[in-house]
Length: 405
Length: 139
Image 1: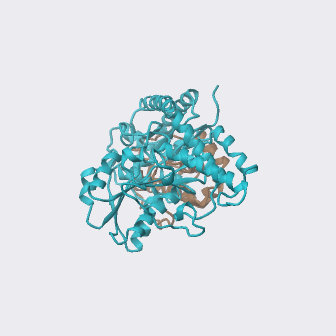
Image 2: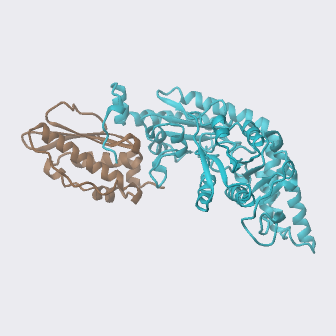
Image 3: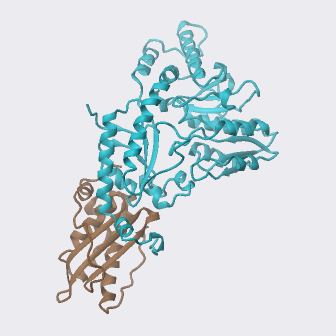
């Protein structure tokens, strides 16, 4: 049975898995203690639950539980990881290397660091969305303390060559921070095999609750330390003060456990749907996949439909299908996606893009419906598009002098 | 952002989508906007030379729902108006009619620009002087 509306914006957030909610409920109602209360059973229960969740989270990424710092989410993890290293390692240097397609939580953190006297190199990406490893290595200087490159991109789903990046970082004695938000729980991530020193990630992208995440901080080979950004009661080994969000952490742990158990099967099923969706949509004329198709998350596709505008396209079906677009019109800024522009896409193609994020609860029927609805809307809007008419008449649109606004 | 009923109606049932013969002497064509900005409107008017009345209007638009609705509405308003009356169509009339939010006002500005541009094209073709308009404020 077809279930409407269809949610295909799983890169923005995922629905909670009912099993996660079930695990959390008692920690709101019965075991509501503060995990830092050492003198009564309420506190002990809460602490025990947090310890167990910490193990579940650590296990998913091959870490030691002591290396997990609970945060409010990935944005906080990005801030703590990057600013925390910048401050802790100030005596070693002040240079950070990142890339132009990082999430705003990383880019704006880096801008903040620049304002306070740090130096940041922003690597360009190649047309497939991946960084050039030679450029990365060439950017390393004696003052470089950190490389901050995301595991997988939120808009186009491309997966960075993290192992190769960490090998370069190790070779030069530089730490590697990665924003694992989109990757953890979806593809195998192992901090030791991948050589990651710090990694931020969050529960709500993996069927857990919003408002809880973690920063992985390596304790051995090398031992990494970050300067706290929130001061207070010295929770989380002094790196992140604040009363622990016990129900959230319990849910995060459960979500990690489920991801670990179901990953193989979920991936097989979801990637099959994604590939089918993509194959069918690419049957439309002038439709292009943005970013590498080879190095990509199994549940993501970003496609541009030339000569139709993304928001106009969404309007054709957004009552029934939840999707996101790289079009300027979806944001107040009127600027199209900076990630798509970084791939070298013209603004016109960036405006024409849709991002599909499939998930655990996506069904074959929903994908069939989506293919039909999008194909019909693209055809309808092209009939209405002056650019499509010109294209069909063989006019080279780049030769027209547009009255730019 | 939620769209107004009127925007949704124009988007779902756009009025006067199509193409007039741009080489015809009594047809004026305005092409405004740019693909990089995410909006391109082409608006055309067909004028009865004897009466100066707009007998037909067509549009094609690349853009969001509000841009499509603005141009669809503009063609509806143009039909049956004289060229002089058409010049009086103000973008704020479109904003009001479609309940456009502030972030979409540029769509109405584009529609007004398209009308003026089509009228000037018609005037130039018929040996009349091009009208100079003040630069639109919102872009």
